[in-house]
Image 1: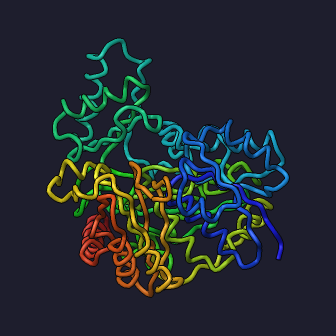
Image 2: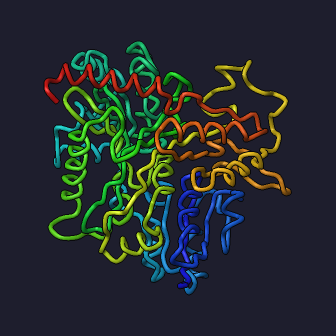
Length: 473
């Protein structure tokens, strides 16, 4: 069996799922060199070498890689921060190790403004109405306020406020969720505006889905559609999070989608890809250049945003179902001969368990916080026994967790993900729920309605109503 050394730049359960996919290879003996933000219990156990770089500084990562250049055949990057900061450009310039992720130039989530301009050029009908506000264009606050008010008149106040750069200011704010008056909206706007450009775009009505694909520079290969749950609390209430869970149905589409929706999404992604790729091939797009958040409206799919890396949690719905060897698939991306991967025709459900401060749970539901568990270690042993019981039908992916003095502790973000696989969504959900309920300690909590029959039924009915409004779609 051929030995392959692989660099995995990791943060959270997404990176753990990637590492797990490599370790399950039947064709290669894999030595994993994992760069992590903390001593993740899963990665530390399976890695040939595990190193902690808390800020994932690209220069520090490159120093580590250069010392292991003779052992590493290729690398893959999960989190967006190193991609935006040009980790591929740096490592490929300093070593002969190819990385699977786009170059800095094609990390298009680095600017929401440039994203919207790209979509407007490639396929304008997928853009919501939007307007860019640049601090350089205004003399004072009163001037920009007049323009914001004028634009809100056009949108009938149904607006979404987005900072141009990731993690700038207060982030994305939505009318009716984060603010209910123009003054509240403008306060949110100014908190972002002091850092740079801000987009105000129309708020769209519809159902969201996540489109992901692999790319070798010549073509994109779509992966099955998934549905993410951004809101912290049940019933889609509370603040946006990184994602509390997600589901995938059997086949390629979600229960509320049609085959026409799926075909349209692929058409949209290919038009954007053609715009970026040029006439022949562009290996700088290698990896997952399109993780697109679509919203299905009465007029068809529109784009909320795009990221140039795999989705967290959405890629966890797909990787455990790959029939093809993931090492071989990555090599094909590097070589430029990517083929459509074979994927098991199963459903999958991801449910995250998170600390009490995540999403403001401790403030919203103080009575539900198990205070006797605050700061205590997390016991994964019960969940790990279930992984053995269910065999290939259950995965357990620790995320924001750290090993200290032989104990495992949850940190501030999404602590651990359970991935249930089944012949249908209901079976996959049942397995995932059983797993998260078996995780003890740390006062962790989770959304109990991820992939519930009630939630999915509402999505189906909502899309029926929207399609009637939009015509015969």
